[in-house]
Structure formats: C-alpha cells, structure tokens
Length: 251
Image (cartoon, rainbow, N blue to C red; front, side):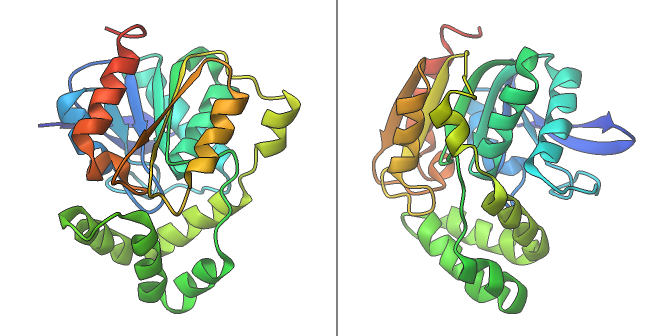
C-alpha cells in the first residue's frame, strides 16, 4: 500500500504517493492523479506526484508544461534527489521538460503513450467547455482497449475534473518539441525506455517510433491488446518491461 506524503514547493503542498523507496518518479496524464501509477508503486516502487490542481495537491497557477516541470523538479529534489523520470501522455511531456531543463535530476527517462508533439482534436477542446460528458466519452473510447473497471474509474475522474482536464489538454496542444529533436537541439543523454499500447489512438505507435529514431540510447516496447492507458490495462506486462529497464540504472 502506497504511503501519502506532502512536499512543500514554494508554499504549495504537493501530494505524493510513495511505494518502496527507489529513485523512480512517476508523472500522470491529463486530468488524472498519482493513483494512475498504483500498480507500479506496488510492484516496482518509487514516487508518484499529484501535479498541482490534481488529486490532493494544492492549487497553483499553471500556464505551460514548463510550469509543471518546475513543480516536479522541486518534488524530485525533496523526495529522491534524482530519479528515472517516468511520464505518461501529458506527464511524458513534463518528463521531457524535466530532463531538458533539469538534467542533473534525471538518471533515466521512461516515455509512456506520449509524443514530442501532442496535438489535441479541436472538437475535443471545444466540447470540453460546452459538452464535457460528450468529449470525455470520445477521449475514453480512444484511450482504452476495452471497457473494464479502470475505464469507469477514469470516466468518473474526468467528469469530476473536467476543467482541469481541459486546461491540461490545452497545454498538451501547445507542446511541441518535434523540430528540437529533428534539429538535434534536444539531445537526451540518459537511457530511455519508450512504451506504447499497440492500439493507442491518442498517441499512436508512430509517435513512439519518432522517439526511437531520434533518441540514441533508447528502447521501444509496444504492448499488445492495450491502448493509451497501458500501465493500468496491462500492468503485469508494463511492470516487467519497466523492471528490466531499471536493472542497470537503479537498485
């Protein structure tokens, strides 16, 4: 069972779930929270953050992915000092920014169902303001391989936090490091694991393949019968891949 701890960052209480102590730090996706990593915290260990305005963390003014990266960097410093930074979707964008902006904190990078650019369908952004329930159904249909328990848990979470989900997706839509990778401006020097569900329609396999082609020390794993929420749909397979990657990086 993960322990909940509070970390002070510039006077804001940031909530973190802590599993077995390990230099491993997880960042959740849009409209979600640290509970998204419950299977990994239990089986692998590490720390998972509730980003500001999510879960049990306090509110903060967030205007960019870089703002989230700042809160993550300060939380990493106060929990494990440095870590393998693991991020999913929005969290993957944040993880990339942590690695680039605060390289001294990053000993490895795990990019899960994410991309170097994260465009969001305009109709999704529009409907989240006018008909959030409709937009959320579309997101879930593209995000899960099948309608299991995790699907319904995420649906409830999205409906409860539709305004935060909308902000997160707007930030994703503005996030774009594509040309920075292509030009060589961004060079990731640490080991990188790239994981994607074979049926992911939100951040399809081609996004992961872009990383594999532009990050020298990287490994790509595609997990079958899983979509965007691969860490909760296929936790055993995901955890096995993650543990293997960590073997040579952290104890």
